[in-house]
Image (cartoon, rainbow, N blue to C red; front, side, top):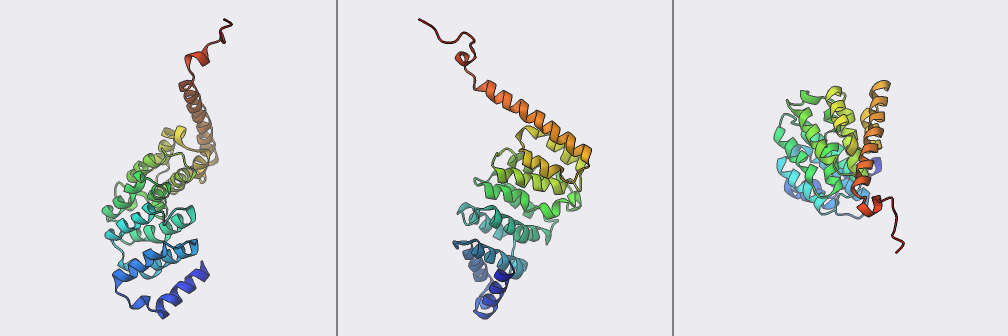
Length: 239
């Protein structure tokens, strides 16, 4: 990170990008995400965060969404740095603006796991403040998690777990209720994330409840796929 940061700032200030008009600077930053290597994408992230953050606005969120659609952001490392360093600070800069939050949480229905994950991870550093961000923030985060938890991919699940762990700092009761309601859909890893900072007894109770819920879910899935022939105790005909 330190090496990429030094290279970015040296290039930006010494080789001309700093003299470009702001729209051209933004376009150049986005072009870095088209690079083959994660260091290129990290360079783009650092330009957006450390140089251009004050110039970013709601309209840029659409351009960020297209980075996911074009697979320019398609791994957890790039996705999470982008969330923590760009999307989160962009929202935090003017957090009462519910519209900006809505634009990102709408990604919960995106076609790629990385964009759906970002609908959660973008808010991890705000979540512990809960409704102190704005009234209804907690409910909005839970609604977003309810959509993304339906996807079984590991990184969709851990994105939910990470956000809920932080949100529990603000409203543990709401997070616990949500977790209990969605245990059958949640991976063990996600539940471990959610309960990581909870008191031991509460953590153990939720993990045990998850074991039971997943067991019931698996039995239902097996029952749905058993045909009458499979279920018959008589076996094949000898005729």
